[in-house]
Amino acid sequence: MKTVAGVFTSSEEAREVFRTLRSMGFAEDKLSVLLPWEAEDAGLQAALHARTRGKEYDQVLNEMAQDMEDLERQYPGSDVEEPFRRGYERGRAHFEATRGRAALHATRH
Image (cartoon, rainbow, N blue to C red):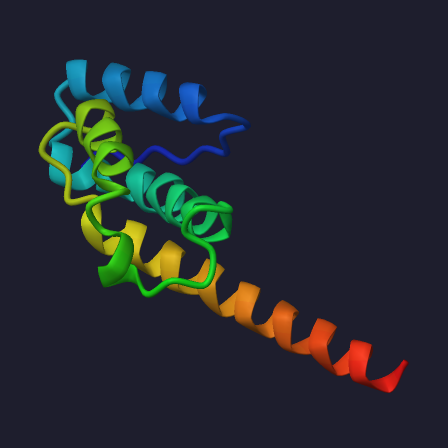
């Protein structure tokens, strides 16, 4: 059994390690651990983007299709939708909490 651990400072660095490990014979399903953090981050960023901010995931799914297609090209054979959705929901929750605190602050002043 082969075990590899690493910390990546950029998405490009993670993609390069993914490609290298895949070329060395690591199964893609074992490499999928590299994907979730990047897909979740992309989902989080999408949730905070001005055009999608505050909207339900299902409302903006078509708008975000290109983001998911980009991830699928970078990580062929990997499921990107679930981690992307988790990141989107996390970003949306953060936005809602921030908006709620801002509204509360505004009513006190």
